[in-house]
Length: 388
Image (cartoon, rainbow, N blue to C red; front, side, top):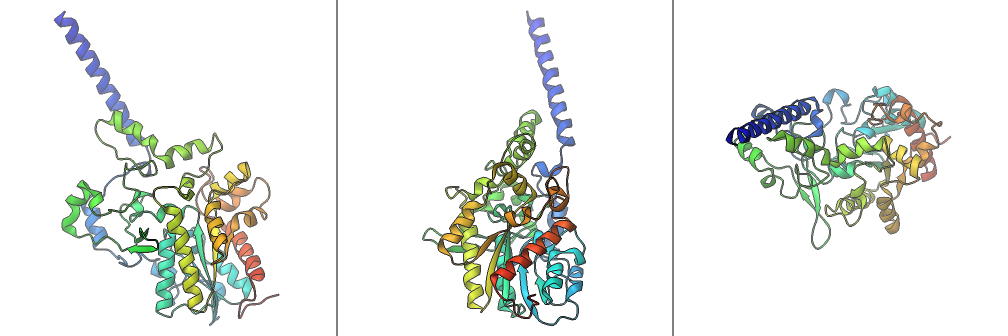
């Protein structure tokens, strides 16, 4: 009998070792952005000694900007007075297309006056709003019409202080807002990390991000960590909603992975935070004598989801903004779809056609400029612009 037990134990041990080795090998085949990996000490120190903007987190690459801090726009050369300014993320900036094809530049050509594009890749709605504040505090934005673009997915960025909790960045700290118990927003600045914080940072992220809604493993919207035993931790990776929702998107009618954040009852209060940021933007723009406008920009998967269901995941945000009427918000989704031929959606709105994701293409930027032009014409006269 003892020999039978020994053989059974060895057999079980071999099976577990094979399983563990199999899951370990499978993990190495997975894209790194599917799970959370803490930065190495070298990456941590490199980040802290790099160019950190302690107000906004980061800025656009200087070589991509004109002396005034907005994106280079060939159509704006020689034009001295801006008529419109843009704030937002990479979709506002026109990421992955050359300056001449970015929608801000195309809008400049259509309007006949300068459109200053202050969009920065990776920004949340919170950072775009803070950039607007900063430019107006310094008097560097003279445009009478100001547009803040909210990409639908930005609602995720608005509830974290590290973009690395969402994307492939090793470390990308940012400010964020939280809702006060009595109402109103309170700004949380960037965590002031120091080189000697590295071990504590790896051990307990919560002490540096006490109000973060995307701490690894803390919710289904947060990335998972990989640990030993791999046969337990690797399967848990597929409980990360961004991962499983993306995989199921191909086979079923599912909303984008972040759609639940637009639920007013969500514990992160993401909807309330985003709504109040946009309301405050409208109020402050009017205080500066500006005419504010909000563009709500859909991702490619938002557009595909609407084609399948006739629903927009971000409708609750539009409803709350329209209910109070404090700032005009425009859903660009229907306007963009109206300009796309059947079956050509990804040619305009997916730089990655395989995953049906990414940024808008050259064609998509052209359509976005046309939509913006149509909206501005309906919105009223733009000072200095060609209104024909």
